[in-house]
Length: 214
Image (cartoon, rainbow, N blue to C red; front, side, top):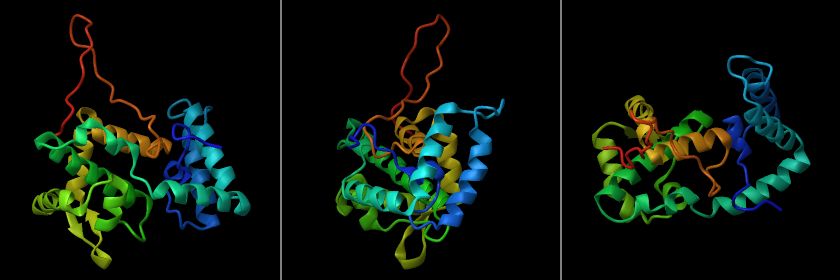
């Protein structure tokens, strides 16, 4: 049985929708495997390849996928652990980080699912563990800045401006790094997420990067 610290979201690893058909799973795996295979001298990544192969072997087997989907469905009812960080507590800092968190969730959704690129307000509530009243201001702000828009069925969808903003601030945002980098490894549903790399300043002393993207 997997624990909260080792459960991997295989759909995130393959960057596909949970509704993806077998042919899509095979095609995506083949393309990504070439890129991250350890024999690739430029982009090879043994750990990422291991996760990718594990994801493919599970999702390409109908019986294993059915069991896995049940386990994933149970976890889908709970907020992502990253949103339990103090970064999202009340106050101005928490408000700014909630905006970044929303953008990250929409970014991951847009990248993985072309048929349903957005998320409903209820889905954001479930993923973040905040009532919609605590998300309304953040969503209004993101719409006003044209970082998000309204898609089909009133879903909230990230725009190209929102993507550019998020990617440009990735190196300095702890929240964005955990959610976006975590999605690459399928670990957004675990409490074991990475911290952004912080370059050592002159003199060799390490310091933490900013916690909030303004």
